[in-house]
Amino acid sequence: MKNCLIFLTNSYPYSSEEPFIESEMPFLAKQFDKVISLAVGLGKNAPKTRQTPDNVDCYNIAKTSKS
Image (cartoon, rainbow, N blue to C red):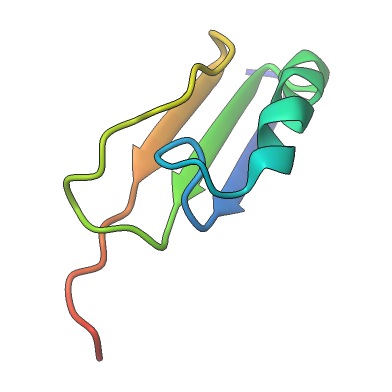
């Protein structure tokens, strides 16, 4: 893999929040061989609600506690 972007979000692509990322992601996907999107502000069973380019891998890093 030549280059990779690790992209931290609050909820993208698992909710309708952060709408600006949806328009930026195709540009980022063209600039990097792989984009890894990590959503850090969700519950553990949130469904993916948005489409992403093929070279974008998305992971919901669920909150395990409130502390």
